[in-house]
Amino acid sequence: MLEFQPTEIKRLPHSLSIQWKDGHRSEHTYRLLRESCPCARCDAIRQENDPFRMVPSEEYWEKLHLVGIQRVGRYAIQLMWSDGHKTGIYTFTFLRELSDSKVT
Ligand SMILES: [Zn+2]
Image (cartoon, rainbow, N blue to C red):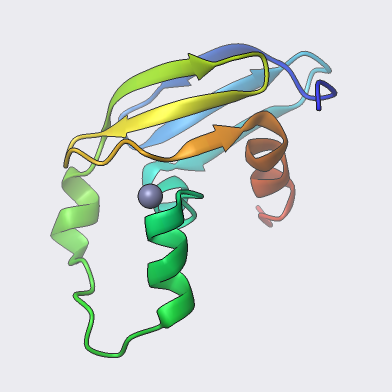
C-alpha cells in the first residue's frame, strides 16, 4: 500500500500535478480525475450507464476545478470539487495507475 508516495502535489489551472518519491511525475486533468471518481455514487452512475442521464457539457468541465485536497491517512487524498462533490477518496496507487494507463 505504501509503495507509491507523493512528495509534492500541485494544483494547476486544469490539472493536478503529482511528483512521486521515485522520481516519476504524473499530471491528471481535473476532468479525468472527476470522471474516474472512485466514490460509491460515481461508481454506481458509471455502472448503470443510463442513456438518459445528464451528460455534463464542455463548459461544465471547463469550469470544474479543485477547491481542496485533504490527506487521508498515509495512503490517499480526498478531492473537493467546485460543484460541492467531495466523497471521492483517491488512493496513491489509484492515482499512480491512472497516470500509467494514459498514453502521452
Ligand atoms: Zn464521486
